Image: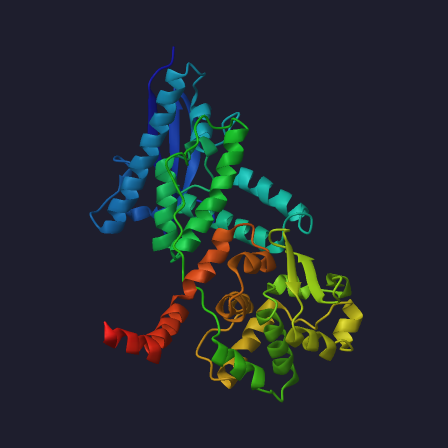
Length: 411
């Protein structure tokens, strides 16, 4: 038979407490036996009411701290009540450990996250990229910050994750981390994979994501117009690094390849068909889908220009590509030099290929999808939506067609 449980909060002065502050502890008593733990909170000793077991005063900070103490007490009693319902052994130590997430058979959320991220790290280059690891590491960091913010703990049992936790994390990312809509959804989707691992291993009984659905906001893709592309093509830079980056950016504009795929291009990726036409054939690092792109005269000339470049010769690549970070930094200078009022990035070149170079010139969306290495035509259709402005321009020309205007007058 288990007796009632009592909880007492009290200050404990440490040797390091030389500033008039003390650390607050919780003492749990069950059947006359005690167990204590630190709340990792320090308060001014003179403001502590030993009889009431809380801070004196009515200031907002005092009220918040006393609410925190009440929350700790309520959660400890919740643990105690659950142990009673489940017929488990109960002691002060068991209640303490369960509250702290140290109970037996407890699978901790961040520990599962860490195991997952270590697996990804060990498989970089064999199905996963550094970028994937960076995204999951960032998601793990945000979840950790949310646990500290919402629960004042370093980790929680994964079975504590419910729909309220998910929506709370979503709000936290938007309000405290200033993440935009799509970035927030991306982090939640990363977190969802961790919960699915727990569900698959039967560490949790229900999937808390059952009533949550990712909703993405499609942003209009920026791209260079033909006039901007021509301006970029005709601009020559005296600074070698800027000229090199400009050439490689143009190469991307006329091949549609992502930066990471251009970086690893070598002679083996250039093949000839039975008509003698040269093609770039490479599997995208992101999706492993084959991209088949006819080699146009501009990118072919750029390859020829840099074939004897020291870095090309040393690495066995087709182009002397800088890091993505340095390239995007130099592209800002290039945009200013060409008077292009857009933020040039390596990925904007891919958008330019999809819109200005191909779709705007009548290349079918199916062919563009194949060249871009998309796994779904829906992805390519995003670029087609961008072309509404071109449709408007084309229709404007049709409106002003003399023959149509003459027909209209005769009606």
